[in-house]
Image 1 (cartoon, rainbow, N blue to C red):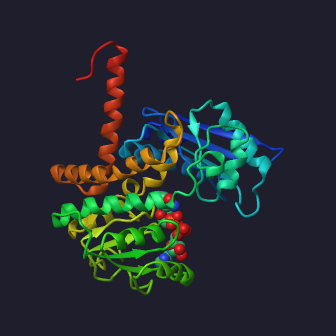
Image 2 (image 1 turned 30 degrees about the horizontal axis):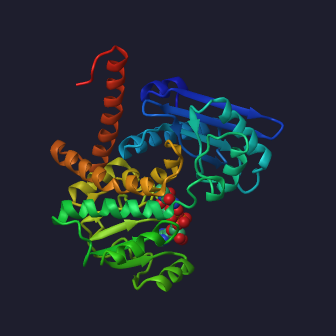
Image 3 (image 1 turned 90 degrees about the vertical axis):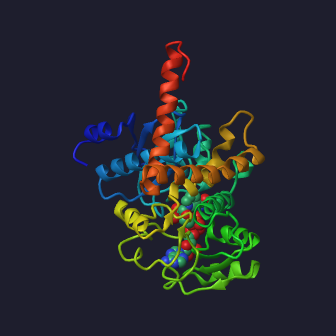
Length: 363
Ligand code: NAD
């Protein structure tokens, strides 16, 4: 990144806050991308950034990603992110996160934080001691608790929308689905697919994760090295990012890719290459938004309501269907249609608000 202001101007960021407290060794960056839809919301990441500039760049990039995720999911939140410079295995302390909590509190609700890479519900509890602007919390603290199940449910809704577009029916019965990764999300996706009547093939590099799933449901187990090239109807990546890349794109033998893994496209051109191969790609941030939708429900009037939260997660089906429609109408790959969907929603809200402020009625 050549210049912070240059970068902020290019992608229209609102603020960057640098937080320092030498008594506890805190160095953190809070980036606010866009608050048109609501308060900037996104997790706190802790990482050993090689330079301050890289920490700022990461906070900015991740904050913008959150704007798109919420906008496309129909959630009234904006995009923000916090990064703490430090080693999550060595440098965590109650006082450090309480100090960060106090900084977040001073922003008065402009930014709402949550769990991310390098942080756990424990650190969220510390921050919650200083500020109410924290979302991912255990149920005992008024939070939604674990979110993997809601993320999994959202992935399956997205998958059904893809099946309807490709096969003319959203039924997954009889379809073969390969699931890569059986962690918090994958292990919950599998029973849902089995319930839908799909033939499920699973793979994980951790044999204990495989065992835990095969103890619950009847599925076929594949070698983790072979799962990508395996013939199936649907590939469901629930492990690492970057799984769609120059090596894997020619190897896929599926019609649909729909899973929870973040940043599945190693590069944008991999999305174009998938499109050229006629494989329907469900953009990750659209179909993996279930956990976030579920988790942030507690910001609605009256606090957390499980029924409303799950109804909103189920709407991923309609979101995915709309973006497939946009992609077809505009002849663009689905990953571009997802961005367009998000940008259109923000623009519509911005315009309606402007007209309302002038006393005019939106068209
Ligand atoms: P997790 O760490 O609980 O599980 C990941 C699993 O993938 C582990 O069991 C791991 O052994 C396995 N794995 C790693 N490399 C593998 C490989 N090469 N082949 C097969 N298996 C492999 O993570 P999670 O919370 O289940 O999240 C999975 C993905 O979904 C991540 O990319 C995460 O960022 C994303 N995501 C998760 C949530 C959520 O609610 N937890 C929400 C949105 C996005």
